[in-house]
Length: 505
Image (cartoon, rainbow, N blue to C red; front, top):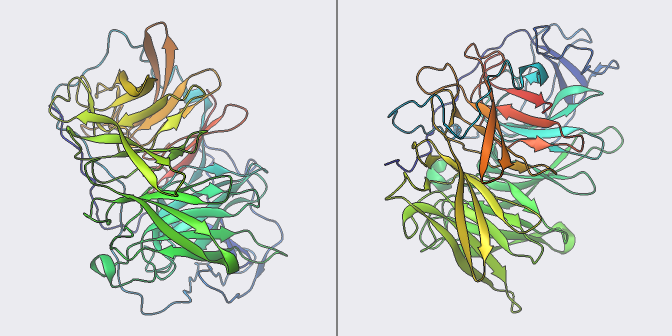
């Protein structure tokens, strides 16, 4: 029987400094860290800006550089805050079930090696080397111009452990657009949301106004990052600081944005019982925001690590990793009422006592298809104990769960920690943190595609190579652009501390 995986935290390493160049345009730090290795995009694909100037800019949370236009010397990072306490780095959830039996093939599954399936279409767009930004902690979100944005849990200020927001552009290359210091948040995690004006919204696990809360680390924030005007810097605003009490603490998954501009998210801890919350942030007059706890986790499980999804009727769906009626985690629904309250419904309880027949421990959010069916992943359970992909189908007044795929470990994937994406033809794409090849006994991770075929789903894989040059151990969801290209990140590998990659299926 599989066990519910538990998120581990560890100190951030400094990572490899490698050979970086930093190019400063006003208050931005541009990083040119491209390699001419095979399968890695050359400088011709992403170019740093040609017009460079070194200047100082006063403002909150901005990265500074005192470099020449040649940018051959080291970088100086100055924080506008001082006396910010040391904070441990919240790394990714890295559970791996006990190795029972490695299964090399499943009868109903087609396993294609990386050299056959996707290696020719896999490219590293950026390799993090650890100096300014390291350990990607989200997938990517794309704006109207095709620029990609994401977060790292380390780098930036606070001794290099504050975390950053970065931009990847076909015109200007990779740039760190914001570094966290403490009062403005620490260690962003989870995908960003973007509005029509190009503002980015996200969460940090630690930091914020209540710096003595949550073991003196701060209990996390919700923030907005507004794009520059007239060549100025991005502007960060803390929309809410969690206190660690009934309002919740330690958001892990970012936020989602509805059409009225309200933000919805989850916190891993806090609430009435300390089991986590679902919250809403609503904009008010004078650029103010108010938080409402929609639900404090009780009988519906504990530890919501994933984000939320909103259906056409305004109902919210999410997951909890742990506990619940069957002790294996849950899927839940929150429905808005006319009086402004929300009604909780338990959609499904994963069977923690019989994991060989069911998944255990969903750590990611869900996706919806056009028919209203829900799809997600569990990090454990299934036929082999290495996690599942599941579907929940509305059935009258209830829901029916189907395990679409059980990961087998070994050369197959294992321990999916991220959610899924669905393309127009009905294919499901995702990542597994482990499985595949290399990295000792656990494997270096995979990117997978599941194709519906009659009464079963067939799988094809990209396995991250053991030498790590293409990345290792993805833990965040993929993004799909309008042309069907997949984009993602890995927590490790490349120059040592993660990569951004692109796959053309």
